[in-house]
Length: 113
Image (cartoon, rainbow, N blue to C red):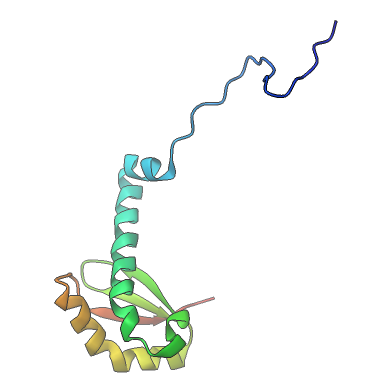
């Protein structure tokens, strides 16, 4: 006699699916990934600080980039955006410094691809 599947009743199986580990827990459990996550948060924090100083819709053309011990990188969509960022650079660096964040120096790079 065949058993019919009834809604609400899972068929019995010898295989069980392990509990999934939330992504945040997985990232924090691995030293290298935890460091990468911290760097991403630091970069996004700086972007949130300087975004109000970017004119008009320019924020669509600027992305937060890598951060290291020396500087934070802003990625510009094209050369014109990079040129405007270079004009704003002293003001943006002052905004980061005013928040007590280090490094406050900004590198401006044109985003590839």
